[in-house]
Length: 101
Image (cartoon, rainbow, N blue to C red; front, side, top):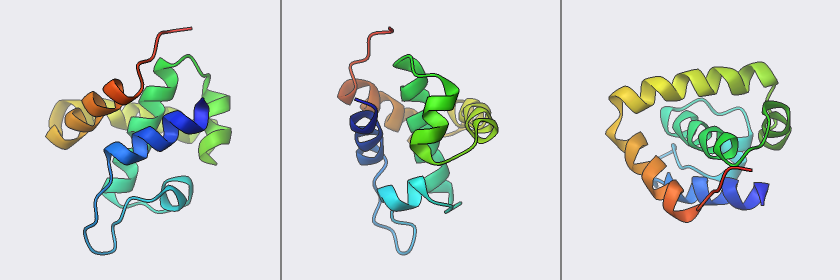
């Protein structure tokens, strides 16, 4: 279920603009472009909503627990200012009909 949610989140954020392509390898890797960071934020948002804890999410995304908490804070900024983020979250919500555990 965890990987399915991650894949769905990535599919919501896919762009094919030049070198900033959103692919799973970049999301799980060290890429820091805005599209990749936004995709990670969508993943963290959806996984927390699904009831996974920060440590589990960190392991799945190959990040530290601190990085996951930081991504959650960044997502609050995206929610306020990014229309693309809001659209991606809405699409992720439809692809991942999550009921809290």
